Image (cartoon, helix red, strand yellow):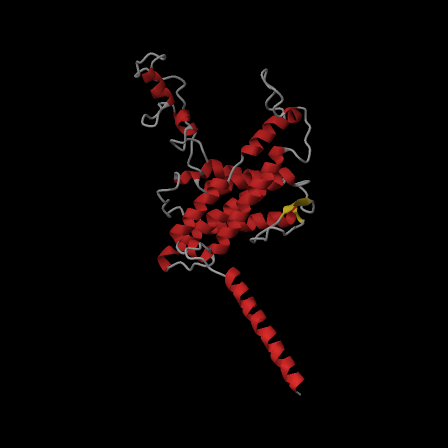
Length: 308
C-alpha cells in the first residue's frame, strides 16, 4: 500500500512541473507586444483604410509588360552600343527563367495579395452612416485594381483568352499561408471573378468622395473611365468585339476628354531665343513654371490632358 502511495505521489510531482513548464512555454511564445500593429489596429478608421489603399496603388506597375512586349515583338532593336542587354529576347528566345515574365507574375500577385489583405482588414471596421459612401468607394477602388491585376496576368499567361475552358492563372481571393500551392483555374473562373469585382466597383465608385491630400490628382485614381477602358481591352482580348466596341465608345463619349491642340514651338508672344533658359523653362516647364505645351504638361503629370 505504501508503495502505491509513493508511486502516486511521484507521478504527481512529475506531472505538476511538466504542466507548469508547458504553461511557461506558452507564455513565452503566445504574447502580444505593446504597440503590435495588427489588422484591427490598422483598419480602425476609413482614413487608415485609404492610407493602406494608397500603398496598393504604389504596387500597380506595368513596366515589365512594356519592356517585354517592346523587345520581344521587335518594336525596338539592338542599339549600336548594346553589350548584350536583353540579347536573348531580341533573338526571340524566351525561357522559364526570363526576368520580365517573372516580374509580371510576381508584381501582380503581390498587388492581389495586398488587395486581399485590405479587404480582410476592412471587414473588421464598421463605418458610420456618414462614412458608408467613402468606405464603399475605397473597397470599389481596391477591387477594380484586383480585377486589373488578374486581367494583366491573363493577358500574358493564359493559354488562349478566347477559350473559356482553357487554362488561365491561379485564382486567389483570400490571404494565404506562404506554403500554400494552388492550381491554375480556367479562363471562365478568372473571367467571372474579374467581372464580379468590376460590377462591385461600378456600383460603389462615388465621384463625390474627396481625395485625401496625400493622394495624387483624382483622375489618376480608379474611376468609371478606367473601368470602361479596361473593359474595352478585356472584351477585345476575349474576342467579344461588339462589347469591345461598346465600351471603347463609352470611353470616347463619356470621358469628357478631347484631343488637345499641341503647340510644337513656343508661341510668338514668348520672344526669348530658343537657346536661352527662359525659352527652355517656358517650353519644357519647371517645378514652378507651367509649360506652354499641353503635351509637356500631360507627360509631366501636371494636367490630365488626354490621360483616361
